[in-house]
Image (cartoon, rainbow, N blue to C red; front, side, top):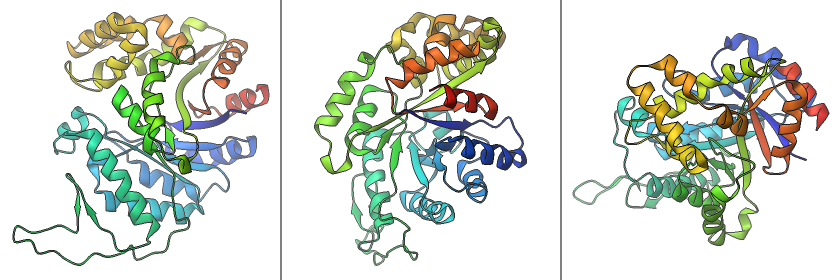
Length: 338
């Protein structure tokens, strides 16, 4: 059976979340995922939520790798896993040039190679089987000074709850999706079309061919925007601004991974039109230009029966969905219908 999780935005006050998640946990919601961009961070929120949940998995969707050294992420993962009793799912992503360079002030360079090294270092640090050493192109631990000298290697000072914390990668481009299929426990696509698996098939097959069988099958967890109600048009309008932000505002005109992904799904001209309007300062027009067909394909909108029917399409295509909502009664009804 497809698992159902919740993906939290930042619209609700944090103080309201414990009661909501207790109810969601009782209803059978599998997981809760917290994102970060250039506002609230995911770590603080998940640490807070760990105290109010018992069985629900806690996911980062996603921690921005350029914002943290691999060892820092390993410490964070070890801490969250202890606080939650071994319930962390560590979602990682390279983010994009807009956030990496425009917010964190570090270069956006070689994201694929850096991700491969980063994941390896985090796993090694968490496993704590030996002092942490890594000699890569992008990360060298311990750091070597120009004269060749270095500090001694060390282990994490705390023992892990689990020797391996699952790592899920947020990937959009074909090469990044292939990398996720090769080295990650799970894949977190930004946009997923359950009716067009061919969009992702070649990249997934390439990565799976190089995958270590010990990892087991790749867990496909799709984030899905949702708005349920009797007025289909109003529900589409409720999620339209989010798609406009991704297509128009999450990158430059030259580099926006979400615009490129929407193009591969079949909406190249429409996505480019939204992007141009958004970047030219016409936000309202950009929102209005998000096509209904894209929303219907990538989101769950409309009357409850329609949403349930569409969710069943997803059920045959992915391992889990994380619904971008804090409407727990809606989640309860959907779980009961599956």
